[in-house]
Amino acid sequence: MKPGATGDTTSTSATHMLHAMAVPDFLETAHEWRRLFSEAWGTFLLVVVASGAVVIGVISGGAVTLEMKVVAPGLMVMAIIYFMGAVGGAHLNPAVTLAFAARRNFPWSRVPGYILAQFAGGIAASCFLRAMFGSVARLGATIPGPGVNELQALIMEVLLTTGLVSTILGTASGARNIGSNGALAVGGYIALAGLWAAPISGASMNPVRSFAPDLVCGDMHTAWIYIVGPLIGAMIAVGFEWILKGKPSEAGTRAAEGRLD
Image (tube, rainbow, N blue to C red; front, top):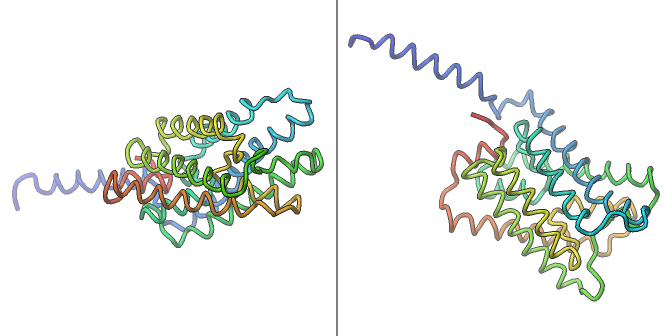
C-alpha cells in the first residue's frame, strides 16, 4: 500500500458523502409527492395569473392592459423557478416535461405523474377563478385573435413554443434552468412572446394554460390548437438542441430534475 493511500480513500469517501447529503437523490421515490405537489402548485399559480389577468382586465374595465397581461405570467414563472425550482425542476408545462424527456434529461417513467399534476393544478386554478368571478371572459381562455384563422394560430403557437423550449433547454444545459440565468431568460421570453404575439394566438405555449379554462367553461372548439401547437414546437426545439449542443449534458439533467450542486 502506498503511503497516504488510506487517507486519500478516506478523503474521497468523505467528499462523496458530503455530495450525497447536499444533492438529494432524484430517484428517491419517497420524495416524489413533493415534486408532484410543486408541479401542481406552480401550475396553479401560473394559470391563476395568466388567465386571471384576462378575467380581471374585463372586470376592471380595462385597468389591466395587454402589456400587464403578458408580462405577469413571465414574472410568475420567474418567481416559481426561484422559490421552487430546486424541488422538481419547475416544468409547469407538459410540453416542457416531454421536451426534457425526449432530450434524455428526464426519465420517461416520471412524465405521466408530472403531466397529471400540471393538469390538476391548472384545472384547480380555473375552478378558483370561476368560483370567484363566474365565467367572465371564458375564464381567460386563449383563442385566436380577430381575423386570425385556426391555422395561423396553430403555426404561431408552434413557433412561440419552439422558442420557449429552446430557451429552457439552452439555459438548462448551460446555466441550469433552476439558476438565476434560467429564471430570467425563461420569464423574459414568456413576456416578450406575449408582447408581440398575444393578439394572434394568445401566446399560450402551454397546453394546460389553455385546456384548463376551456374545460371548466365547457367550450373546447379551439383547445386542439393549444395542445397540438405547443407539442409540435417542443419536439422541434428538442431537434434544434441536438443540432446546437449534441448529446444531452449532465447540467441539463440536473435542471430537469431540480437538483442543485
